[in-house]
Length: 224
Image 1: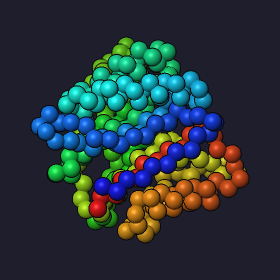
Image 2 (image 1 turned 90 degrees about the horizontal axis):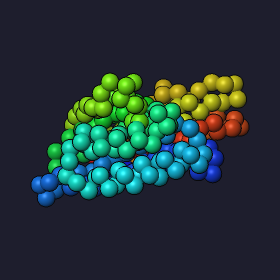
Image 3 (image 1 turned 30 degrees about the horizontal axis):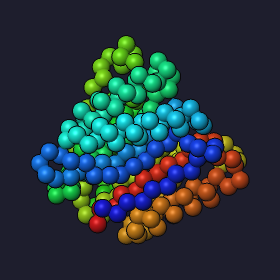
C-alpha cells in the first residue's frame, strides 16, 4: 500500500483530520485503518474538537472490535460534544485486511471517496450513514452500516474533504469531482506522492488567484 497525504488549512489551524495506522483484529494480526474527517466550522473550535476526536479514535482503536463498533463508540463521544448537532463531523473510515486486501468501510456523511480500478472502472464509496454527532432524535438510530470491497493490484483510492472539490476560481466555478477524477486518472502508474502533487497542482492551476475558502485535505492510497 503506497499512501500519500496532504492538508492545507484555510486559517492557521484546521478542523480536518487524516490518519493511517495499524490496529489489532484479535487474531494476532493487524489491519490498516484509514480515516479522513471534517468538523463543521473552521478555526480554533473545529480544531479543538478534531484534536479530541483523534485522541478518542486512537484510544478506541486499541481494542480488537469491529469497524462498526469502533465508529459507534466514537459517535457517542462526538455526539456528547456536538453542541446538539451543530458541531457535527463528517468522516470516512476504511479498514484493510492486508492478507486479503478486503476494504471494509463506513462513510459517515462524508464526500464519497473515489476508487479508481486498474481495470478502468470507478466506484464511489458512499454507504454508511449520517455524520457523527447528529442527536438521536434527529438520526433515529446510532448505527452506521459498513460495506466491503476487495482492492486489486493497481487500484487507486482517493479520500478527500469538501474543501478540495469545492475550491472556486475567480469566476466562482468549483473545481469539482470531474476535474479531480481526471487528475488522478492521468499517469496511472505514478507513485502516490507524485500523484498527490499532480492533483494539488491541477487544483491550484484551476483556482488561480482566488482565496482558499475551506480546509483542503486529501489521502491517496495506491495498491502495489
